[in-house]
Image (cartoon, rainbow, N blue to C red; front, side, top):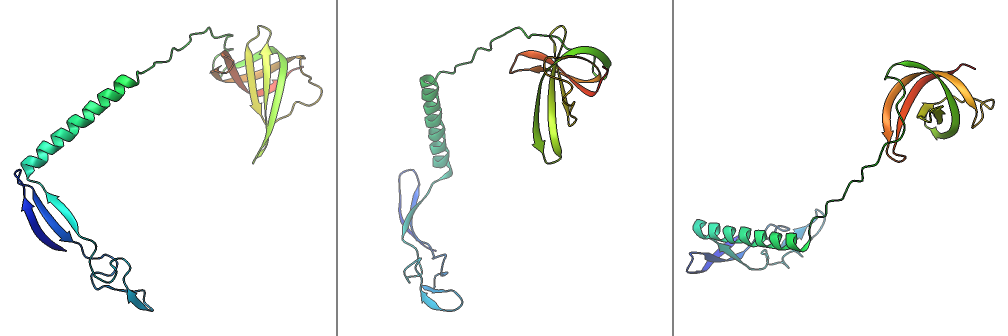
Length: 187
C-alpha cells in the first residue's frame, strides 16, 4: 500500500492519500485462474484499487470524538423514549375453577363422567387423550395409547382406579386439571 501525507489539520489529524494493493491479483495486474491469464477485473490491470483518503486521529482528538458520539446516541435514545411510552399490559386476575384431585403419586378410586376422546397418530403409533370429570365437576385427563372400546360412551358414568401423575392449571380454560396414569376401569 502506498501512502502519501496530504495535510495535518489544527487538531493534529493526519490526512493520508492511500492506494491499496489489489487483493484479487496481489498487485500484478494479471489475474490467473490456473488455466488462463487475463487482465485483473478488480483493479483493471493497474495493480492498485482506487485512491482513498484516510484520517489518522491523535489519541486526544479520538477520545473527544468518541465522547461526542456517545452524547449524540444518548440524546437520540431519550428522544425515542419520549415518543414511544412504555405500556405495561394489565394482567387480568380471574378465579381459577375446579380443584385438583389427590396428591401426586397417590392412587385414587373415582366415579367419573366420560366427556371426550381425542387421538392423533405419532411415529410410535396412535396416541389419545381422555377427558373426564368427577361428580364434583373437576377436570381429569388421561393420556394413553390404549382405547377403551365402544362399550364406554360419551356422557356415561364409569368407576376408575388411577395414579395421579401431576396437577396443572389449564390456561386455556382457566381450570385446575389433574393428569392421571395407569387407569383401570372397575365396572
